[in-house]
Image (cartoon, rainbow, N blue to C red; front, side):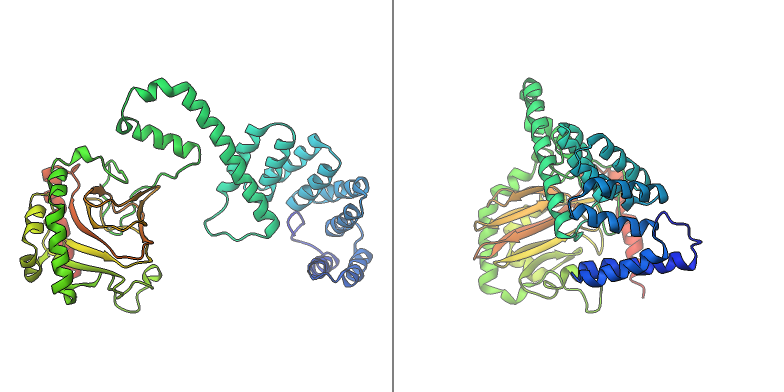
Length: 431
């Protein structure tokens, strides 16, 4: 037990074992058996901290918080490094309305375990009771930061965590309104693009959104500005591409009518790889692709079917790396299909979507920003930032997808990346 010397005697070790049985029996609601085991432990070491804490718990349940406090103070004095003793004492002090003493007990617990979830939640609740909502919200933020994604908690703690989230959100809204009132004139002075980085900064500070960073599966090129969706103004050719939407869409419809065998599952990993995220879509036509170029290799028969699409693509700065780029394809996502969160291979390229067939209920998330596709409205995004897609409609969704060079790379940097990628590909493809 925390707070006890590791060099415990036989009686101490026996008491620890007995009290572990008491806790189990209490959880199983076998109180008569628990009392019998507790009596055995008390006979061995009546002043053992574990024995004292159990006696105090029973007194508190019986409504005698004052007696429970006295016993818990003895337990904390006997085991000053035991977090549970201090938290139990804080709980009894809460029932006695001893706010200052409770705070001191919680602080002792947090000194021993600064990221202890229950201690942080208890402190946040106490600060709320003391009329200090801003301080409470700050502590609740600390508590929530200790939780790993997917953590499963006992129901009472989960309820307190949910309360903490509400309090943090309420406080963030108050701060947001204050910022809006004070900064309204400054915000009105610029465009949404001008304010984009600042607004994301505020969103993160207020807990509204996480800032995602590139996590490529292969090459990370440093010192590039990373955006989830890039500003349209950076791509002068985007309007020309969008103007060709109807012609491209017509060629897609021709493909769907005449060359269904040319559609292939987009996810096609060999069996046995540790790719749990792709378990449902691997080798599935629920997400399929009709490639024009695949990893730098032109599919001549497909290209011949789509001359206007190819013409539009040739007017864009497609990646040109032997054996790796360009890649361009029609992407079909079947109804009620979800593409799970994933990241691409390198931030030296960006990805372009041109929506062609988009029923209602189709959305796309990159990082903390989610958008709905609109037919004929293209966007450019960094696919090394976590992204995922949904088709919640009853009809298929179809878009044209291709990759381009990241415009932040100089010509020399492009040449170096191209050369390095080709060398690495040659080396890795030898075996």
